Length: 267
Image (cartoon, rainbow, N blue to C red; front, top):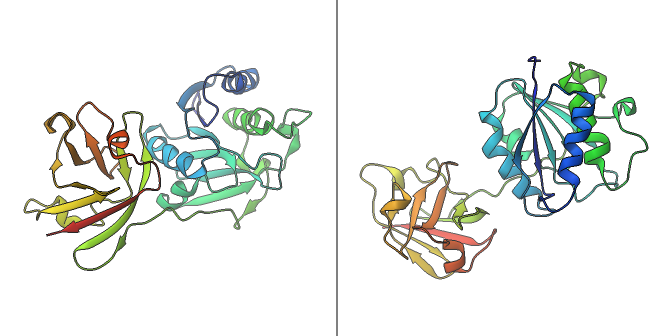
């Protein structure tokens, strides 16, 4: 571990309550040398897939050795397991509910351990706040150099969700869905250049994208190229096809949320 280990926090806690501050207090109480980074605390409440997407967009940009605490945990207090995951040069501490599914999908080497070593927990352990009593102290002790094997045995039956994939209907048509709506109202679909390389080639054909009966026929390289109130497509920084509007919310204009169907047809 580095002399000042980095621990990131991704939760659905928001900022209206004390929860995030308590996580930080627990970690710093065990390792005052830790550097804490808020990746995101505005994941949709109880939305495991939204948490998985959010984490996937951020963790790869941190240095090797970073520990990522991920708490989107609607099953807290149930039989779901707390887990410690090593994926390449990163570690993740999270509930075993599929919130690491994008990590599992992207990383070639995964080691998952069921956290059972209660000596690393805060006591008594609340049935409603494992983020405070299990995940945060485990991350803090890990950042102090404790070996992953000390926290529990390796398991292979961890929960792995299958993120929605675009479906090719025929040679010219695809069906996708909305993965995420960001703060700006951009509609982030699950369609990538690997799914429809023709759309992103130098000699791209005409196309139409239909979302909630609204038809989009323009693909721009930047948001600023869109005319005021125009709805257009763009390849976003996350690597997915987005539906956007210049200085406005495409999601509000089209009246869609996560899970909305996206139909793409090439001419």
